[in-house]
Structure formats: C-alpha cells, structure tokens
Length: 160
Ligand code: NI
Image (cartoon, rainbow, N blue to C red):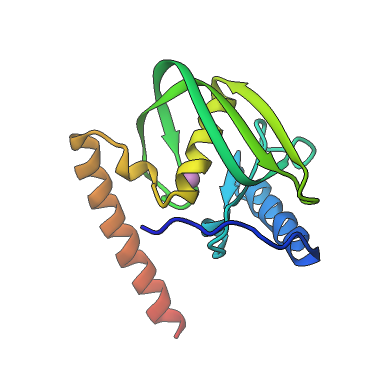
C-alpha cells in the first residue's frame, strides 16, 4: 500500500474534489472518506461525526497526535463492505490540518471523533482496517474480500 501525496495546490479543483467526497460520504452513510477511496492519491479526507453534510469538515495534509487509553471498538470501512471488526484506537486524538484555503487549524477529538481521525489518517498512510484486525478476524476478512472480488468480476463481466 502506498502513502498518499501531500496536497500542494489549493485551487478550485481541490474544492470540487472535497465537495464530491462529502457527497459520497453522505450518500453512503459514512462518517469519513479519504482521497485514495475517491480514486485520488492525495492527503485529504472529509469527516462528519453524525454523517451529515452540515457537520462535514475537510482535512488536508493532516498530522495526528494520539493519547489516552487504547479502546477496542467495532469499526467498518466504506471501501470494505461487509468487513467490520474490533479495532484498537487511542481514545483521544489531536489533528492539525489545512483547510481548503491552505489555512492551518487544530482540533482535538475523543471517542468516535478520535477514531474517525485515526481511521482516515490510516487511509492516507495506505493502511486499512483489514491490516489492523486480529488473526481470526483477518481470516474471516480474507474470505469476505475474496467474495467481494468475485462479485466484482461477475458484475464487471456481465456489464462488459
Ligand atoms: Ni475507511
């Protein structure tokens, strides 16, 4: 898995990308979506703790600092439908990122918010939840991934 590249140009196309990412996140009832999931290998993600457009925020070139206890909780990912597992995350996470104008801001989140930051940041580092699952869950996930691949190939062949 590759690391996403830093965003260097803050222009209208970045704005359009962010808007599209928020749309996808809201439509798919997610609470976060990272650039690589939208086919763009850039260090950008969108997040909304309640999945609403109103509370969606854009995080560009983020850096995170984790602290507090390690909490295990069920976590899924829009890129891996049907795969959810118990994932360990830090209870508290401070994020420093740039907004669409390139201005830096810092936020500290706890609980679900902290989990979203860590999950989306992982995407930018080329890590997915399947890389963080325990062994038994990994085997189950592998089976499910194989299924997804076959389903995809089948639909692809039907449509081509
Ligand atoms: Ni994800």
